[in-house]
Amino acid sequence: MHALLIIFVVALAQLSIAQLTSSLGPVVNLGYAAFAGNTTSPSGIFNSNVTFFGGLPYAQPPLGDLRWRAPQMLDENAVANTITDARNWGPPCIQGPAVVGVGSEDCLTLNVWKPTNASENDKLPVAVYIHGGGFYFGTPQGFPLYDWVAQHPTGLIGASITYRLGILGFFAGPTVDGVEAIDLNVGLLDQRAGIEWIKRHVVKFGGDPDDITIYGESAGGASMVMQITAYGGTKPVPFKRVVTESVGFGPTLTDSQIEETTTSAATFVGCPTAGTEMFACMRNASLGAIVGAINSIPNGRFSPVVEGPGGFMPDLPSRLIHSGNFSTVESLIAGHCTGDGKTFAGGSPDQFVTDEDVKDIVFSRWPGVSNETRDTGLAMYPAPKTTDPQITSEWDRAWMMAGQIIFTCMDWFLAEAMLNRSVESVFSYAWNVPDTVLFNAHPYLGAMHTSDLYFLFDGTNTFANAGNSFTAFNASELAVSKEAIAYWTSFAQSGDPSTSKLSTSPVWDLFAPAQNSTRNINSTRQRMLVNRGNNTVTASHMQFVSSAERERCQFWMSEAVTNQTRI
Image (cartoon, rainbow, N blue to C red; front, side, top):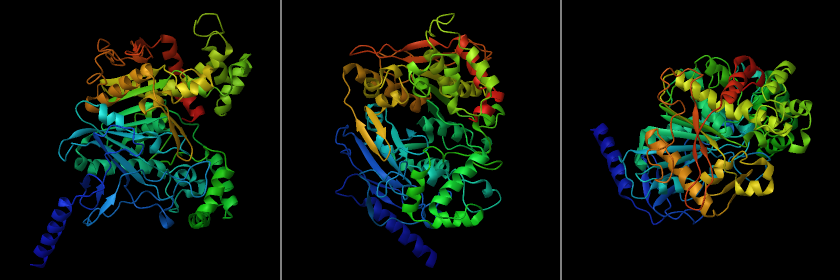
């Protein structure tokens, strides 16, 4: 009788919370928690047929003993008896440059957008966005998914995840091996925990837990690669499809670099510089001391590290792909901005006059690359105004090389790897429409890094410490935005970006055309070139990937070279 009474009380409590409503907004009951969402967006500029739920905790606060620990599950066996206000964003994670009082260490939350009329068991596809920012800054607030959900014709659930950054997300040290002092790469573990939370609970928002597509740009794009290669492909992934945009990371720090960075941080805080004592001291340090340590070390020095066998990142992602130790997905889009390399060439056009300028400046980002590799690589980009009409100056050689070392060729590399796994639905793109705000400031950068985000997220320009701004589109920009969002969300719907494309948009064909049945690496490859047009239609079209570009990518993505670039 006692057991029956408990069952009855639990059932009664669940029924009670399910029937509750809130004057705050629509309520979604997850059983252990209930949240009131917002049909009037935080900025007030988006379509009201979308309901937003913000700041939903997906793990326990990573505070105290949980600092630098893998995210711990909430008590999801509890029974909700209150409704939590979820009408706005959760706090951004502490990032660099850090400011006390801006952002929070208690930041493991996510956001969900749903059609207002969507209900449980509608089984809508789910699009999950993971922001970039070099693994040391950024927040979902700069990447709202209202338009993705509002524009999609058959219904879509959107979600985004806040994850630990910089020293709080990627603290490490060579003395960790065999010591259970901290967990490594907790920022990546946060991402995975957030996706798994979505998989467990998205049905309550109207989503299909077996139809999740994950998206990421720059460090978010690198995160996509790292989620695919997680655990060397030995564990099932909680997603079905992946979109990588301008994959940006590396070089991954060596053990000696990790030791130097960790020692610098511990010294600043006043902690021992080795062993479990260091980690215990750092775990007990005040947030103010951690903020000071963040600002004492160059941005980007705390980022994903190789953990070794059994870890989330057991080896360099490139090595895991080369060895076939990665997870197969059903569909893939992999692309980049045409000006990614201009953003990361390391200088402005006037600084590149000689071959030595190109090698010295471009490879300052890749110090582990040998002189022989630099010479061989540069030789693959003809001298200006000789055999390649695209190369008219040393600047052209520099930015093309800087872009292809990682951004262009990593998306090619991952696409080829999926083709070799007999994944048919592989697509690629090159984004050739500049971010208007950034272009007006630096026209020579063209369609620079993050240009696609400007159009996918309402004219966003994002900065550290959650400083986000949005610029209204003119008619031709709006045409690009609507076309891109239709492609991106169509992919979440079916694994084909053309399923729900705009009627005015061209068909986005496969990376490896179907007639190339052999799928060998020298067969035809093609991608969508996203181009601005007039006020009603874009100039986007399919383009073939040149043999010269494929040859360069084979070189940059060869195991011998990626071992030097450590990507």
